[in-house]
Amino acid sequence: MICYGPAVLDLSDELVDAYAEVFSAPPWNEDEETIRQFSGRLQSDARRAGFRTALAQSEAGIDGFATAWLTPAPFPAGRAYAGVAAQLGKDRVAELLVGALEVDELAVRPYARGHGTGRALLAEITADAPDGRAWLLTARKAADTVATYRRLGWHEVPPLPGTANGVLVFLAPNHPGARSRA
Image (cartoon, rainbow, N blue to C red):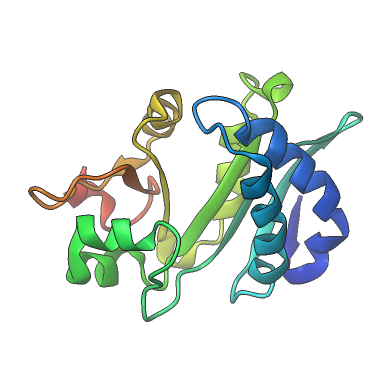
């Protein structure tokens, strides 16, 4: 199920609960303050251009979710964006990321893993990405997550020489820039 814009805020408590369960565990180890910040970010992110949330639900509640929006121009500087820009350079950021669908969060509760939930959420959230242009980033230290994205056909964008840092940028399997970057 996809929710567009602020409509998802009716589920914010459940999303924060799922986020906390997923991201308080290794390798993320996020603390209560970071989880609280996610709650605040969700309130403002829901008003971004192109914001949408894909939800996986069962009788247990929200099994997982993904959030995404269109990456604005100029490319943002907060959060992990500075690390992305440093690794890719201005020209590749403009070519590959600006105007593309940015998958910001993907969270699947432990009990729902291994059943295709993450794959389904990614497919659903990126189904209408402009010209197939979707991207995401993850922490370099999250080896299992990195392996999952590779297994799902996402393409890592190599950093410029000497610029590697703690984040990895992946392009969706159908992103037009993916084949030349893999």
